[in-house]
Amino acid sequence: MENKDRVTMDCRTKPDANCSLLISGTEPEVLELAEYHVTTKHGFKKDAGLRDQLRSLLKRESFAR
Ligand SMILES: [Zn+2]
Image (cartoon, rainbow, N blue to C red):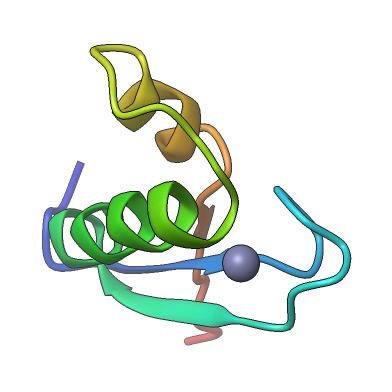
Protein backbone atom coordinates (compact mmCIF):
# COMPACT_ATOMS: atom_id res chain seq x y z
CA MET A 1 0.00 0.00 0.00
CA GLU A 2 1.34 3.40 -1.00
CA ASN A 3 1.42 5.50 2.12
CA LYS A 4 1.20 8.81 0.26
CA ASP A 5 -2.22 8.01 -1.15
CA ARG A 6 -4.85 10.42 0.01
CA VAL A 7 -7.76 9.13 2.00
CA THR A 8 -10.88 10.85 3.26
CA MET A 9 -13.19 10.37 6.18
CA ASP A 10 -16.64 11.77 5.60
CA CYS A 11 -18.26 12.36 8.95
CA ARG A 12 -21.60 12.91 7.24
CA THR A 13 -21.67 9.29 6.17
CA LYS A 14 -20.15 7.94 9.39
CA PRO A 15 -19.82 8.17 12.30
CA ASP A 16 -22.43 10.91 12.64
CA ALA A 17 -25.00 11.93 10.04
CA ASN A 18 -25.48 15.28 11.79
CA CYS A 19 -21.87 16.28 11.23
CA SER A 20 -20.65 17.63 7.89
CA LEU A 21 -16.91 17.39 8.45
CA LEU A 22 -14.77 15.96 5.69
CA ILE A 23 -11.16 15.11 6.57
CA SER A 24 -8.74 14.50 3.74
CA GLY A 25 -5.02 13.74 3.66
CA THR A 26 -2.64 10.84 4.00
CA GLU A 27 -3.83 8.01 6.22
CA PRO A 28 -1.68 8.98 9.25
CA GLU A 29 -2.82 12.63 8.97
CA VAL A 30 -6.47 11.73 8.68
CA LEU A 31 -6.32 9.22 11.52
CA GLU A 32 -4.69 11.75 13.82
CA LEU A 33 -7.31 14.42 13.13
CA ALA A 34 -10.18 11.96 13.06
CA GLU A 35 -9.15 10.56 16.42
CA TYR A 36 -9.15 14.04 17.91
CA HIS A 37 -12.41 14.98 16.23
CA VAL A 38 -14.49 11.94 17.18
CA THR A 39 -13.25 11.90 20.77
CA THR A 40 -13.96 15.60 21.32
CA LYS A 41 -17.13 15.93 19.24
CA HIS A 42 -18.75 12.54 19.13
CA GLY A 43 -17.95 11.09 22.53
CA PHE A 44 -15.80 8.23 21.24
CA LYS A 45 -13.51 6.59 23.78
CA LYS A 46 -9.83 6.84 23.01
CA ASP A 47 -8.77 3.23 23.34
CA ALA A 48 -6.69 0.68 21.50
CA GLY A 49 -9.47 -0.18 19.07
CA LEU A 50 -10.32 3.37 18.06
CA ARG A 51 -7.79 3.72 15.24
CA ASP A 52 -8.87 0.41 13.74
CA GLN A 53 -12.45 1.57 13.91
CA LEU A 54 -11.55 4.87 12.24
CA ARG A 55 -9.42 3.13 9.63
CA SER A 56 -12.46 1.15 8.56
CA LEU A 57 -14.29 4.41 7.84
CA LEU A 58 -11.64 5.79 5.51
CA LYS A 59 -12.26 6.03 1.81
CA ARG A 60 -9.29 5.82 -0.51
CA GLU A 61 -9.37 8.36 -3.29
CA SER A 62 -9.04 6.86 -6.71
CA PHE A 63 -7.69 8.88 -9.56
CA ALA A 64 -8.56 8.21 -13.18
CA ARG A 65 -5.45 7.97 -15.30
ZN1 LIG B 1 -17.92 14.70 13.04
